[in-house]
Amino acid sequence: MIRFPALKPPPHNPAESHEFAWDGVSFRVPRDWNLSSYNYQGPVVNITMEDDVAVRLELEWMRFDRTLDLERIRERYVRASEKLQAKAVTTVRLTEVPNDWMAYLYTMADKRRLIVAFHVGGTGRFFCFLRLHGEEVGEKSLRNALQLLVSTLRTHVDGVIPWQVYDVAFVLPREFRLESTSFQAGRKQMIYGWRLRRLYLWYFSLADVLLKDKRPEEWAVEFLNKGKEMHGPVFSVAPDGSILAKRATAYPFGHFEEIGRWTFRYRIICRHDPVRNQVVLAVFNYRQDSDLALFPGRQGEIFPSG
Image (cartoon, rainbow, N blue to C red; front, side, top):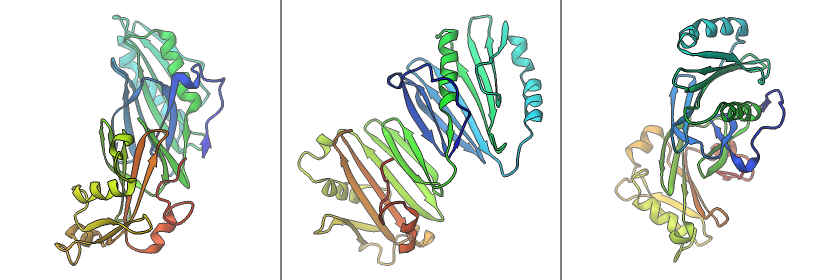
């Protein structure tokens, strides 16, 4: 893990902020900021965060196989920001960021404020660009948000990387790439892919209600058999409490999606987290036993706590 130059302690205490981690990058933001959208454009990752009022953060990052020329990037940024400077009533270069960051505070005629900043990592192979919006907040709050983010920003390159969004938190091997998400009230789903293998993750809230008359494994089997994500197998609870997947009668040779990806094996893990009142369910659809070695810890440990 690459750590960025240390600054003075963030202006927010932990109770006033929360951790966000996404695709190899993690940082802290004010407590009421949450992910509102994300997208991938080739190697570029874009995320947007909002509070209850408006968009607060737009952040994009990318990694390169070659070292970047920081001076050329700075020159290009200055040219690109000329139009923004022309619209602003005042433009202030912010000095409370490390040397490998460049940040400006723009104040518009209608009192709207915008911080624009970019950073090239110490290796010259990581670049990120951000916009902080402060329509209803003061300049101090906007600067504090910048300092909080910059002082806690980390990149995670090798091994397992953290993912943390809303009430979901786990770590995964870096090889897995996010394919799709579904974030609904009380139910979060994230699907990952690796060499045609597929990993499904679900986080369910209100576990005390879901498990009122059932063990977690029994509830998980009912959910999977009624679900639309996997048509090939039929799931059941084994005598030892593990969850098994058997070939469905309707698909004696496997579902067409299994055949297309040549993945006929399943490892299913279901956990009840009474502290967070959650049910966490993971299904790994894979080819051979050696695929399980990708996960850290004991064999089959799909989502170790992290």
